[in-house]
Amino acid sequence: MVNKACRPTDSLIGHDAWNIQLDKNGQLKHFLTVEGLSTELLSNILDTAESFANINEQRVKKVPLLRGKTIANLFFEASTRTRNTFELAAKRLSADVLNVNISTSATSKGETLMDTLQNLQAMQCDMFVVRHNASGAAHYIANRVAPGISVINAGDGSHAHPTQAMLDMFTIRRNKGHNFGRLRVAIVGDVLHSRVARSQIHALNILNTGNVRVIAPKTLIPIGIEDMGVEVFNNMEEGIKEADVVIMLRLQKERMQGALLPSEQEYYQMYGLTEERLRLARPDAIVMHPGPINRGVEIESSVADGPQSVILDQVTYGISIRMAVMSMALGRDPETIEAEKT
Amino acid sequence: MEEIAKPEILLDKMSEQLKILLSERSINQPLMVGIHTGGVWIANALHKQLSLEEPLSILDISFYRDDFSRIGMNPQVKPSKLPSQIDDRHIILVDDVLHTGRTIRAAMNEIFDYGRPASITLVCLVERSGREIPIQADIVGQHLPLDDTHHIKLTGPKPLELSIV
Image (cartoon, rainbow over all chains, first blue to last red; front, side, top):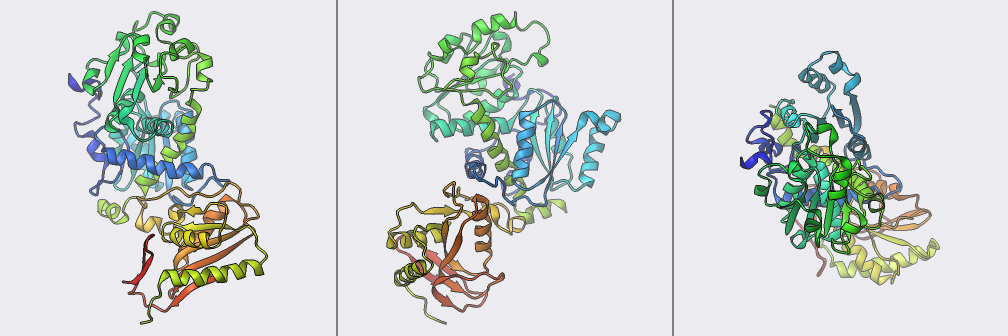
């Protein structure tokens, strides 16, 4: 099954899932997955984020760009970093932000998802930022929202987390320059459950990265992942050799069913990023992690806090990337948006 | 229609006027800021003629425009380059054409998000008719009365050339 690694077989996602992301002018309308987007569009997102990075260093960290727009954060699944940076990004663009707390909202009283959405539409929201534990949830919503409303995927099940992948690309570009062709990027850990890894691999491929590797025990590697053009290693020492970028993934205990791993201790012994193992990578290699980190499970504390770690920069860059995506989706040609409504 | 002058001639005159104005106002170390892109070309020329040591600052006002909801996102937005500390600085703000005044309003809004300057002096290569908000330049290369159907175009940076289209 070729597409198994790229896409969950969940019926919520159609075969043309990424086509609905662009409007008739090829502009980003929804941001649901990196898959299927052009190199030019991804570069455009990164360039736009670069301009916003400046604002985040200004004394008044705010621009009036999205004044009068309303963005609703719909987080059906726990999140701290992503939700906070989406909220900050929206606020720095002067949009009004609605944080819908699903656990205390009408959803818990039995209201259906569609009813919740229709109520938010009646409140004239312009954008939904959606995090859900079901793969395809953001697509499902994007296919059903009123015309003119944009949907941003903030993580759906084990499918995609496009803004995370883009902030990771931004981090790599800031540290290693624009030429991804000469880079060796190693993604280490629980690839099977990781929407972040899937989105990263798509983004790295679209940006023509020279060599993408995944390193994990056989049980945590999805079948058919080689078809995404990555090199697979089951041995950490071999896989990390000469890498320019080492991306650690969190062990997703909450998504694991059955005995995929013997124990956390054994996992750390085999795949944990220790100072010793990091020395096998290039001396100027950067260490990334999407967070939250499990110290002593996938990464040694001294590496997470060490000079090669850019983990906290990733958080900062996340704001710029989310500002870029939000302003691009809400800054589309107004005539096209009007035409979509009729 | 009035003949449009050569930018080099206007720039020579403007830099002389600017020197006089700065000494009248006792401004020693001004911070020169050009508005992307035409304003940067003009600012660059003036920056050289005034032999300023501090590098030229650049403003891209795309994020501060008042017509975002009407024309959408500018795909070619560049980062602004301003020093992190502009409090109590005397700023020389430079643009190519002063028309409606909206660009200058947006630029000043952006400047104030970086800090509180001591003063802003506005310098424009050409001032044309059509002001929509009460903004006026301190130094102007040429005044041009033009109706709404005509636009002034500056091409550059080398050579700088003005034309009416």
